[in-house]
Amino acid sequence: MEGVLTFLGELPLPLVYIVLGVGAALENIVPALPADSVILTGGFAAGAGVAHAAGVFLVVCVFNVGGALGVYALGCRHGQRFFRAGPGRRLLTHDELVRLERFYERWGVAAIFAGRFLPGFRAAVPVFAGVAGVGWFRTALPLAAASAIWYGALVGMGHAAGANREAVVDAVSTANRGLLGGSAVLALLVSLWWWKRRRSARRHSSGGQ
Image (cartoon, rainbow, N blue to C red):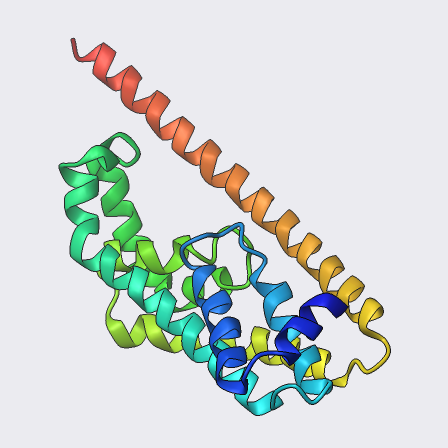
């Protein structure tokens, strides 16, 4: 962590913001990227006087939401074709795609907001919102709200950490482990639903032959 802070301290201030912003944006494309650690480091950098806390918060939120809206736009433009006529039809049948659309129609805002706090699901939520045809404002508002809350907390904790950086890192790691556990349970439930749907479809298909 100290090495990263030293590295950031040697960069011009605009480049510091660009590095932090790109890290925040890339988690929408590479879910395994430790974006929370990048943003927390930005808070530490602000606390050390390398950057301004408000600037870090604004940059990471704008880049993160911008990246999420970028993959949302891809889902809007190519998602239906990918799942209805492309390789994606092996993942979601027509009925499952209709169910997805109905789910987002009913729970879209809440699902997008909650999903952005769950590791692994963060990247998928805006993509499938696009596939399901959720409107731009209904997607952008919960994305922005979730990013402001989560990244605001990370930047604030990092900025206020002072000499207690290790304790803050441990607290964030503990929180992420809990959220990751929730993601794993949700992923298991979704997998079971998908497996049961596929088994039922195969039975109906075999019975109809």
